[in-house]
Image (tube, rainbow, N blue to C red; front, top):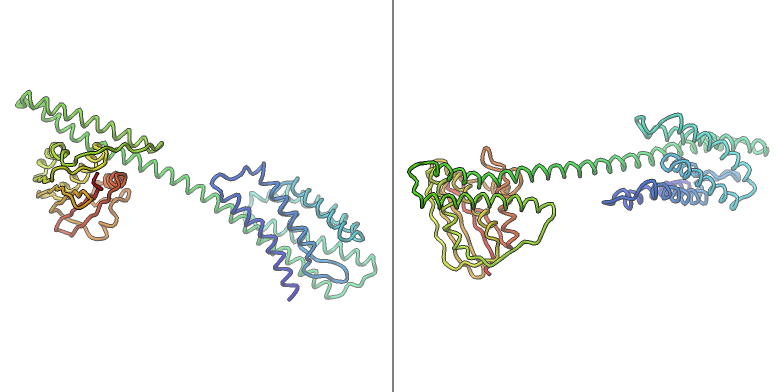
Length: 422
């Protein structure tokens, strides 16, 4: 049992630096430069692991210690480079001389044979570009363990020490343990690196996805004022329009173009967020502007719009963004009534809250559809993107409010906006 305990303890010490390196280095948002700090860190951790393995061999036979000191040397050469490997080898020689100077010649002989062999194996095998990557380090560890055991056996013969069956059995076990331990360490390193590379790729994909969502959202939001401006321009092209009406319609076209410009400015500010400029605003004063914006679209689809707002509904908000939100919600209500209907917009005070309700008697939604509202690219419309509602939810949240949705299939939908009263 002591042999197994010591062996498991050695394996734990060998795997701990790999896991710590993953947690403290590879898992950081901005990892250290590998050439500057990664390789010296590998050399240091492998040196500490080698000293521990030499101090705690997992079995001893007539004065010969069998430990896993070869594994840290291989890890240092394979993943830290020649300098790290030579550093670990030098520290092993120094510590071996400190522990037992009588066997120092055999340790130097072993190092003189193993180090060139390891370097030649790495240079000729090109193992990093081959698959599977865990096989070649495991094979190298097995061959190195066989070489170590053979040299130990030659020194026993030279010292007239008997070589019996238990010694050969322990030697075979020694080689197998090295191969399996190296396989475990290499597998951990390969998996950690693959996961880190996959995480970076996912982060890049998420950034590209955000860019695509942003572009689609900008296009969706600009389409609303452009549609209104186009409708007014069509009306202006008619000869029956009076001069007074032309002035009103021209003014509203300019306002819509300005609103589109403000939307572009808002979305560009996503890249560099700025503090929201809020001011005291009477929501009831926006009703006239809202009815002028949505009436042409509602009339075209056979929808009647009714607005009923109490006076003095003062909130802290941005008028352009609040209008943008109300236009999005009322437009969705109109489109939810393909056969015409009634769209009711009401506003009232409820204690310290200002409540705005937009209610239609259209096709309605299921509970599952309501739960998904406000998420990017989800829409109940065939050609919808869901981005209008996403932006509306964000605008109301910026003002410190909430949007609640109640709906029933074939019985209509009610959007309730709750804002803190100023």
